[in-house]
Structure formats: C-alpha cells, structure tokens
Length: 195
Ligand SMILES: C[S@@+](CC[C@H](N)C(=O)[O-])C[C@H]1O[C@@H](n2cnc3c(N)ncnc32)[C@H](O)[C@@H]1O
Image (cartoon, rainbow, N blue to C red; front, side):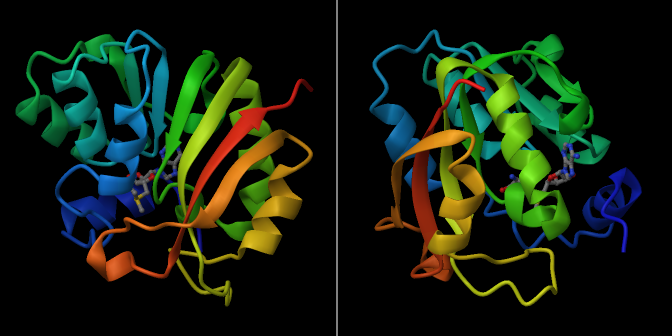
C-alpha cells in the first residue's frame, strides 16, 4: 500500500477521516497554552483540517506553518480561516520541507506514515528544528500489528527510535486525552540533540 498524496486526498474526498476530531485537541492546547513566548515559529506537519492551527492563530501565535500533502483539508482551512496568511499554509510533502522551527506539534501524523519511515521521520524532525527546538504532542500507545493507518507503537519503541535524535523530556501516558483515545496515547516533549 502506498500512503501517498492520492491516498490521503481520496480519504478526504470520500469523508473517510475518522482521525479528525473536529476541534482543537485538549492535550495539545493545554501544552501550548503554557508557552510564554507566542512569537515562536511553530510547524504542524500532516495537519489535516488543522484545528490546532486555528486555535493558535486566534490566540496570538502568528508564526504557525501548516503542511499537508493533501489539498482538500487546506482548502477547508482557508475557508474557515480567511485571514490566516496563505504563505504559512503549505501544500507539500513534509519530507521535502526545509525551514527551521522552535516547536513542531505532532498529532496523528507519525502514526499515518508507514512504520518503515519512522527513522526518517525522527531524523527529519530533528533537521527541521532550531537548536534547542522541541517536538511535542501525542503518540499512540497500542501494539503495532502492521495494519494501519493508524500504526501503533509503545513507549519502549519510541524511546529507542527517538533517543539518537532527541533528549526525551517527557514520554508518558496522556492524562487529558479526548475520550475515544483515553488510555491509548502518550504525551511527549522531545528536545533536539545537536546532530
Ligand atoms: C491521520 S491524518 C491526521 C491529520 C491531522 N493531524 C489530524 O489530527 O486531524 C494524516 C495527515 O497527514 C498527511 N500526510 C501524510 N503524509 C504526508 C507527508 N509526507 N507530508 C505532509 N502531509 C502528509 C495526510 O494528508 C493527512 O492529512
């Protein structure tokens, strides 16, 4: 199976978007709300309808970049958020992106990639961060049976995968997951290690 742009575009066109919670994710919002500096550069990769980007923008975080390989969710976002700067909305493959950020927010993008791309994901995220930049968000905590997306994983697997690239500041069961994901998510904060 190829999880390429056409695959994701079809999922949006056919309304097969079970991952889309339809509002900003509580754990992500409670994390970003604690950040003191609202001027930081934030990237939301594989953002889909990007509910968190809307919340951030409306709450004073202006330097947000949204990337998705599918056009439909970006069009939805534009309609919902006509004032959001168009140049911060990228219809692109994350793995071909090159800017640097202070913070990258992860939610159901990692689990949407084929598991064999996980090392590439970790290395790319490290590359996209400024020194001391952070990758933070949610990772699923259920066995990876090889069927997906979403593909699962465990704390031990994630530690092993990310440790070469990041200092693991936090990786623990998420206490404020949305109801359908309760007990199935880890909240994490990883700080970039210098390559
Ligand atoms: C499971 S959805 C999650 C969307 C969003 N994060 C959410 O929680 O609603 C995965 C998203 O990643 C996007 N995607 C997949 N591969 C990508 C890539 N290489 N570059 C950018 N976006 C990608 C898909 O188009 C899709 O919108």
